[in-house]
Image (cartoon, rainbow, N blue to C red; front, side, top):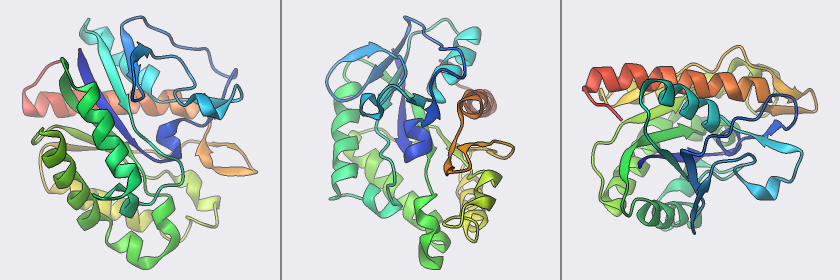
Length: 235
């Protein structure tokens, strides 16, 4: 099975309101949350309950499987409201991700990582302006700890819907510039534009709605097509 690490914070967790978009279920798309591989059904994080959980993963896998009829797996590691410094060695979130990756990769092949995080790091200039360096530090440590080098990484920008969210509106574009610097540092990176989406509701300005999650998955798939063509790889 070709597997992708899913990591980041709540919009990678998948917070779209359930029932407003059709479900996507494919027996050849699996998820690993730390114990067993299962068919990937939303919510990817069962603790969200029945109301939340539309995730970018199903539409991402759907588009990839239109091109290559292979089994796809997600090693699911995102944690809502997590700062980037919590994705560094020694931190609980990081160590749990390493544990899941090691277990989920047994007998499988790592295709790449999907990353969507940064909203939480809009809290200070220091966090926003050092995102590039701190992300590359996290990635280098992850490679070392799971024994996988130079795997493809698709990184989502933070979307313009955050312009109405007081916590993020002053610094999300700074983080996007830092993400651009990451992408420019190596051909192994590809960036996803996250503009044009809507939040679940005005009272929930941080979370992309279900329709947006479906489109975001398709944008991640388009990024994978560009990245895999550039690197000369296939699933």
